[in-house]
Image (cartoon, rainbow, N blue to C red; front, top):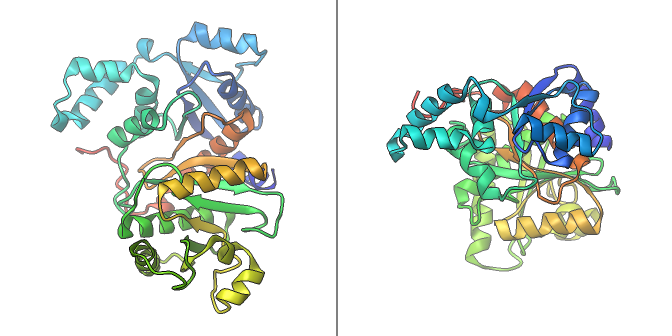
Amino acid sequence: MRFIGSIVEKLQRHPKRVVFPEGTEPRVLQAARQFYSLRLGAPILLGDRTKVKQAAERINVSLEGVRIINPAESEDLEAFAKRFEFVRRFKGVKENEAREAMLKPNYYGAMMVAMHQADGFISGTNESTGSVLRPLFQIIKVAPQASTASSCMIMEVEDTRFGDNGVMFMADCGVIPEPTVDQLADIAVSTAQLARQLLGIKPRVALLSYSTKGSATHPSIGRVQAATALAQQKAKQIFLEADFDGELQVDSAIVPEIAALKVPDSPVAGRANVLVFPDLNSGNIGSKLIRHISRANAYGQILLGLDRPAADVSRGSNAHDILGVAAIVGLQSIAYNELYPDASHKLNGD
């Protein structure tokens, strides 16, 4: 809670609007209520108004301060449908197909964020990753400077010797199965930017492998080495002050004693607060191992590189996890131009 407590304090000074497409989910209802109670902003639930109210009554959650929108009855439905038809015109989407899409909460919520009717988007408690990401990628798109959409998990462990006072950023754990060198570098830089924004510290980024500085040879290791060099270049181009090192084994990245033996001169080894995995298999497995074995507070997936703040939460998330992600997404929206200064903040096709 140390980490989320600091996020909450910052967001209370600049409250934001966050849309939750899964309006009848009990965990979402609890998180939305807490979001309002903590004065973090205006939570927006999507769904049939009667069903949302009934779901809240069943768990005795007040909806005071919570806005409810039924896409089917919304005065913005037709305008949203026309906008979606325009955005997807090259895919041959017709008027009736666009309207059907906007009746789906994830599509409607993504359009709300794209049209500045909400500042952030959170879904995934009852949805597959594809069902959450598809509307976002179709409507919001990738920010021009980022060029790669990815995700990260933020872990807060009890042992404050790890990361930055127990907080570690891990990427990519949810989007790109086998990133290229360029994508891996983008993931490293985007995650470092988020760490810088949320913690105000210098990111120390370790690009992970099963090898440390040539202890093994394989094409996959060369990809990590090349991505490390490219990430350093990309960071300099955007004036991001961060340290990058790779390839590093995870123990070399986070354990000072092992780092002192294997890579004593590294500015990152033994002190990494950002861990970049070489592929989605290792990222997803590693983050879930840490979450469950160490009982870490886990916040994510925070989506990176999109033109608007959004998150795809795990179906195993509890109300506290969802609240934490909502606070992070809300805080992201305050200074999103700083993260992606070249972003046009326009929908594809403008």
